[in-house]
Image 1 (tube, rainbow, N blue to C red):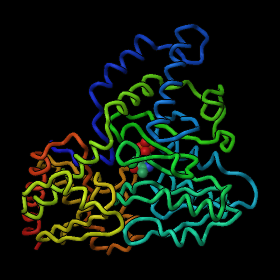
Image 2: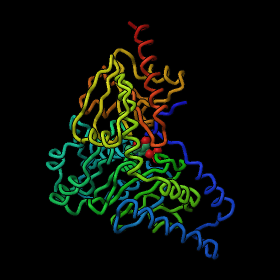
Image 3: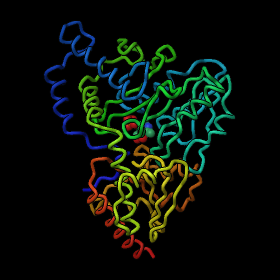
Image 4: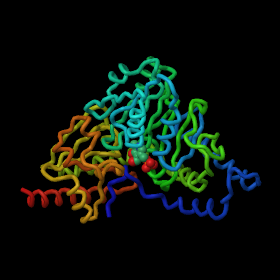
Length: 396
Ligand code: PLP
């Protein structure tokens, strides 16, 4: 099986299994209890928090551990909500775990602005600047799009925020960014940053929210007061330690170069030019801000030139869903976009960017991980081409 849906979830590192056993069967103590054993566990959580702050490039703040990024995003937005004449700003490109919370705020009578996306999939910075004002309470914009891989420029967004509404809270859904592309929060004005373990080879059920200033956030459910009262409930100690293990095992820069190269090997094979590129070449090709569209005999690569981890393929004249199932039969797993929305028709994000309805219906999302081999991606490209042409012949 060749797995090309890593933006949906990733295979857990086997090293995490040992960690799970250790913190479930040996050091299984409740970090809030008063025994020495419990205090030892509590200390390990604090150390992990510091370790993660460092990996996020943050010079201050805390990490709240949650069950998934959907929870982190809900906590960030609902926890920032305040009664009064405040305004809330979101990009049109957000994942449902942000977008649907924004829609709910709107339904509940809040002033909510949705900032459009430019054709490269990034948030339109001019439109963002226009909408921000002194009444803005929260801005929520994702780091990397889970649909297109487009990378929003957090430094520019921060500059605009500091100019127009310095007191507003800036939340970033970093689920497709953290551990994949460079994240240096201290160079930005980001207040809240969500991430999720299962997107970078840690288990499902453990995620986090970086919080620069605890005072700006309120809890969304009440309980025993763990994690500064902002996220009550006994911490998932084993999950936290497994997430730490995964972060320890990943060297973002090396992985970034590997994936950039894999993507070029894959694209070159689709284009029947099987010459593998070196890391240097791969990086030269990675300029953000332009959409490269290349038609390889009916298979269109729509490259948003953002994160190398994600790309969009259009199979002209064949439904994306048909391709997905046919490829599945051949042992290649691809995605249709956000797993949460893949059962619904259409694709909100591609629509907003202005991709034609025919292209949307024929789209699949390919997403890589750094531990794949050249052979795997070359084989996948070959299977994709053969499968597409077989189906195309049948339907035409
Ligand atoms: N945000 C983005 C950008 C995502 O890609 C995802 C998952 O696909 C989520 C949030 C939700 O993450 P989780 O599955 O941990 O709730």
